[in-house]
Structure formats: C-alpha cells, structure tokens
Image 1 (cartoon, rainbow, N blue to C red):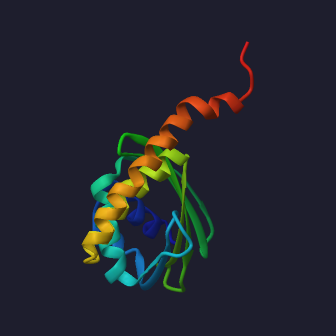
Image 2: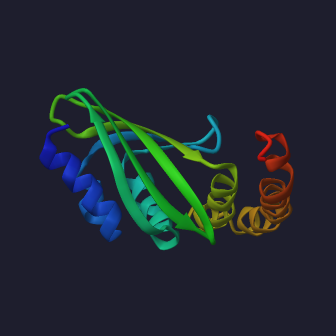
Length: 164
C-alpha cells in the first residue's frame, strides 16, 4: 500500500467517510469479521453498509500503528464503542494496484469486542433485511455484554499479579 493509500484509509476511518474508504479497497475485496470465521463481507456492495454501521458507532478513533510492506500492512487504532474502549488491528493484503484486496480484523479487549457485537450485529442484520435476526441479536448480546463487563471489572483482576 502506498503511503497515499494508507493515509486515505486512515483518513476515511477517522472522518467516517464511506466513499473515501471504499476508494482504498479493491472492488472484489474480502473483509473477515473479528467475531467469527463464518462471516465475511465481499465487494463494495457488502462492505459499504458495514462501514456505514461501523462509522455510526465508533467514537474517538486514533490510529497509532501503521507497519508492513507493499504487499501486507497492519494498521492499529483505538476507539470507543458503546462506552467501552477497544483497539482494532487490521491486517491488509494488497493487490497489484495497491488497493486493499483482503482485510482481517482483530479486536481487543473482550468488553470492547462484545460491545462491537452488540452494536454492529443488529444494525447489519437490519440493513440486510433480516428484521427478526436484528431483534434476536439485540436481545441475545445484552446478557453476554453484562457478564463480560462484570467479569472484566471483578473476576479478571483476581488472576493478575498481587499488588503490595
């Protein structure tokens, strides 16, 4: 990815500009979900609505890492979603024209990932005309989000090093 393409991708995410973002992706791009290996988005027609959903929920996006070569780049940013902090690393595979041909997303920590699932799942299902699935996803994620938030605050620190 040329520095111009990397900058275009980053600027698009920070500005929530779907059109600018799509210009950095190959028309037949494949995007792999951070939630499951069973879901992927292929081409601009599927990626555009995903970006619209993402940009409607992500706040305070700040890129801090951009590394790699002309075939593979890794970009990393921090953001907030649904009151949770998150960090996303994206592995970008580039085609001969320097456009993103494949993107694989990784999100941490767990409360941020579950908040992403809670926010994105229903919206994406609605945009795909699956209203029943949207309602189901909106309800199904709530107990998991509550459990993960509670565990992050109360249980996970019990496994950490002892502090004097």
